[in-house]
Length: 339
Image (cartoon, rainbow, N blue to C red; front, side):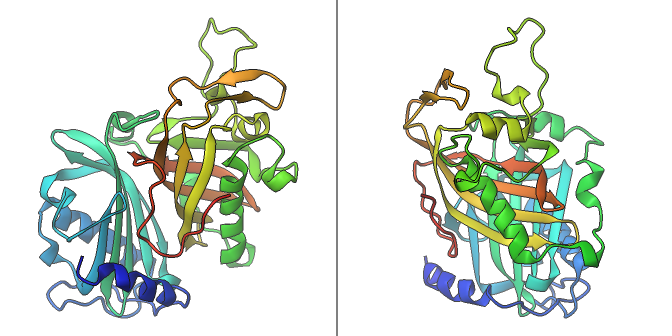
């Protein structure tokens, strides 16, 4: 499509070095975003994007002439796809910002065809204009657990711990944070309970909790009449799941990317593709045999994952992940393959 894919490599190079900080508010009338755009400015840019989206009018935004736009890793023209069907902004909204690299992301609900859906959105700003728009949508019934309706209830919001400000002297470096997030994927891929790359450890706090597509997938209360020895992965915490080798079904996590690091809030925003379904039976680390029902055909999940990191460990994970074509190859540059 045009020279879009060829431009990916150029943008990947630009992503290596920080861009300038961009101005107080994007102005679509001038087609630029002024200089010195810090967190509040980037968050406001998300609001402007969402407003333009439900108005079905990309002309309201300061877009670069060669802006790259994707929906679930499919390259489209801005104005196509969800731009034509979006009805309204939902009630759940979670935003992270990376002023140093001119990036801002959104995780929340939108409305389409009379129903809520989950959207992850990443905007990149360079030289005063939006140059990258990466959006991923999870619609009800799109595979796996789902709690979209609960997220979209009026007044619902993420836990306060996501919004704290870490004192500068206590912040981890960008690379340290990315390494911790990547260790999550390395520990999950062909999960055997032996720790990240056989180290015996996983980077979790004792109270780590994960939400996937709006539904909790850790620390879920067991049903009242469930046998005490029943294998119920969702009843476990993050560490216990990984040490049990519960996720052996995930055979590869590839095209891992970490485009945004919100150092002030201790958050890493990641994208990856999970390949699964070719192995559905295995032996857990405690010697018990286990079979995942339904995981008997090749499938993949296009994952957006936000990691909240405290003192070098992951405390919270929030994910949006629709089902996609098996072994999907992402058009976005900069990802690396799993083993």
